[in-house]
Image (cartoon, helix red, strand yellow):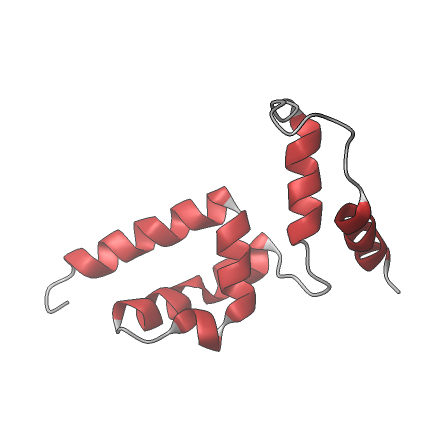
Length: 100
């Protein structure tokens, strides 16, 4: 079992002792825990996503389900604001191009 899977299992069973109505704790820890929970065994780096981002965007612009064809790219875009911003900028260019 990988360390990521161990953390996921721990997160599934760990529940803080607090009232149901109590606000969630603020700060970086909850965000880090959410990111760890969303981590997959295989993930793409930003460089790997940038290498195929144009293909992914062209599929989306053509109305193809790019997320089904390239799920690792979609997962990365769902969790990386910088790459998501790059993808959205590319989509704006593709939509504004003549003939689109």
